[in-house]
Image 1 (cartoon, one colour):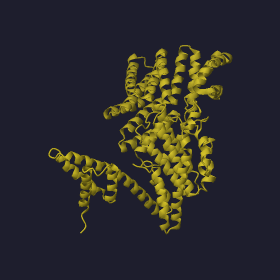
Image 2 (cartoon, rainbow, N blue to C red):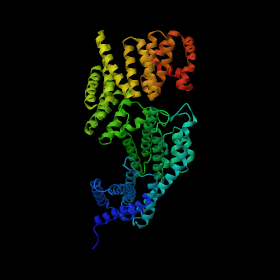
Image 3 (cartoon, rainbow, N blue to C red):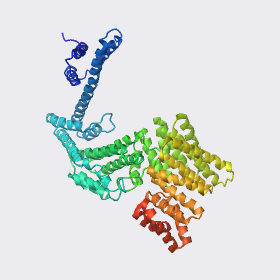
Image 4 (cartoon, rainbow, N blue to C red):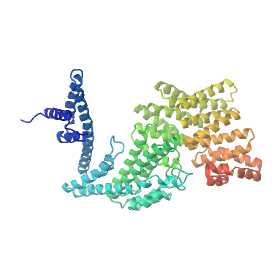
Amino acid sequence: MAQPLSDQYFDLIDQIVDKTLQGKIASTERVYIMLERGIESGTGEVWERCLAQRIESTNNQLDKKLKATRVLRALTTIETQYKRWQKAHQQQNAIADATDQLLGSTTEQIVANWIQIIDINQKEPLNRDKLQQLAQSLETSVTNLENAQLAQDCQQIATGIIAGLTTFSQLEDDLISWMYESQRSIGFAREKPNPWRVWVKKVDNPLPKQLFQALAEQRAIADLGGVTNNIELRGWVELVILLQYIQQGLVAWYDKQPYNAEFGKQLSYSTFLTFAVIWLELSQTFTSNNRFREGCFQIMLQILRLFALRDDFPLYSGIFVSFSGEFLQNTLSYLSEPIRQIEGNKEKGRILTLLGYSQRTLGRYEQALAFHQEAIEIAREAQDKSCEIANLNHLSRTYVQQKDYETAINYSQRALIMARQSGDRLGETNALVNLGYSKVFAARDIDAMDAEVYNEAIRYLEQGLQLAEKAEDLQTQSLVNNSLGIAYVILAQPTSAIAFLEKGVKLATMAQDVYLQGLSYSYLAEAYYSIEDLKHSIYHGCLGSYLLKQINSLEWRKSAGLITILKGQLGDAAFNQLLAELRSQIITLIGVDGYDYIPQLLTEYLE
């Protein structure tokens, strides 16, 4: 009669302990080999129960037997090596399960199943070694398939995996090398450095090569329909693997924050959004292949889900760095409609939050309100308090832009109460700032002369500033200083306004928040104009108008209008002379192209 499995495992544990105490086991590797030979696959629960009993009984004997300490040490070694064994077998099981899932697919399901297998949101996504093992497993197994089409699809997936890993290894050394081609521009810009121009030289296969070429030349991905509609499954799988590893490699490098913590995060965010858009645009090129079209769309959703689940997901801060050379509004315009089609969940609520405050930045207030209201409903269902509070704050800010100050005050008060109840310090900080900000505008709107009304508003802003400084959050500190500066502009206290706005500019620059940079410069122009410092007013007005125009924010017109007034007061000759004197300072911040664009910008304003 066969010995019960539990007895076999007790015997194996005792055997390893005895050999350890006798000095017959010289290394932990020997313990691992004995476990490898002795534990049957799929019986981990039995083994864990036996080992736990031995450890418990030994612990109970520590005060009674001198040898118990040595036995416990041996059992601890067994436990450590078992965890190693368990991890190895879990990965092997994952490969076996993935192989079975693909072999058991229909030809209509296989692409969707493949996308599910490589989902980067899994607890332990397949690494390069495991992907290679999966490819080998598929190649070995397809010979047993009776369905010829399914066998061909599995073989093509295996070939595509190997091709994708090979192609990525060819450009891996240049994954970040392009960043060092220019000291002035770090990120994905229209000028050099441009990663796609570097990477296109490293790939040979038609689809990735033409995709990279289109991105390098700022051409629409939609132009690739002739290539995508003729691609085979192996070519599509190669592209999936290649882009996934490029994205993962870039995010991992940015998250190490090698040069600037805030800028590193901004580039990580940009990477997620850019690759999501690439996959969305690719999906629209597969007009004759529904499997690939749906597969691209699912990858886009996986990327957004991974982004939304990050602990540092930007519920408040603006993001305006983009791979394509365009600013973020172009990216977000692609995502708006597909995101609306997804059923409500925590991730969708967070992405809608980002879409909402980005639409506000662009002056699209009705769209912003719709996004934020929908995000609040989803956040409540998902019990995502921080997301709900963030959207209440964004609604407050948006209603200020629409000059509905009482509604803005109402939302900021609701956000403040909820933030304090849940201990959300970032939400509380933004709520205090929004409450003070809204009250300043509300008082001005009714021509309130009561100093106490403004003093109360300033107190809220100052409380927000204290919290922001404690949190050491650059973007929030920039927002508070910007809000205080604007408040003092409204209160006709230009000296105080300038001090806060200049600090706000510095912090916004460090946080890479282009919108807050532009807004601070814009109000600095007003503050300097009020003290008749025309040179500084022109300087800041040009910077504010240019930066806001670059992100298509309608607020660029405010600065452009002020500069136009100054130009009329000074006359063309005197104005151009002042602008020439400011040239070296302006090009330090926005480059020669930015400086040369200023006259055109003023012409656009007049038109």
